[in-house]
Length: 285
Image (tube, rainbow, N blue to C red; front, side, top):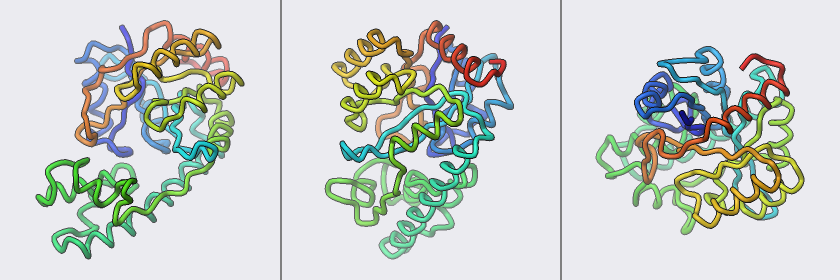
């Protein structure tokens, strides 16, 4: 049976607690799931502590964020089986937790001035699992107050949008994509480029694939365009890269929600990840 190798929980910006995700995968007919919360070791540690839950094999993963300065876009890199004791990885996660919280708290303070009903303390309730005040947590609090009808709707665009720029948006400073790749390599992770269409990353994907820097590409993703999927599949074939699929599940915290199992990875490609992780880290997977 296939696996869904890209999912988020309340350990970052998802709406579902991490312990509930494996049963959702089992009910979707999957036997493998990766929980890949943003820039954190929480999902890595959970999956290492629970290698099988509800009959589902859990792959430890984290989704690291970097910035492609040449093309001026964020980049997400899925890291499977990273060493949770890696100094570089711990440092990356600590820095981004601090930077996200600085930006989130400043935004929340400004929202208090816009909407007297809102209090930062209420939004922080949604950060208790992750330790990070994500924008989604702020929006969940505003939603609960009846100030908007969706987490990612018109109010989100007004507050946090890019074009035009949101009135309370404070942009996190991300490390360069080269730094993030070095971090993933130092942690011995299997490195897969996530959803190239989302941040218009095909030029970078072509470059990294040609240079042999990435181990795989997330071809099957709800937001990848048909054209990019076809090219990514061809790049995997040309350069011998792992062809993965993941739903990028966030539960209710998504503009267009998709259930676990919407996009999946074939068994033989999961096996390639396991084999490479064993080779790099010498661990039993």
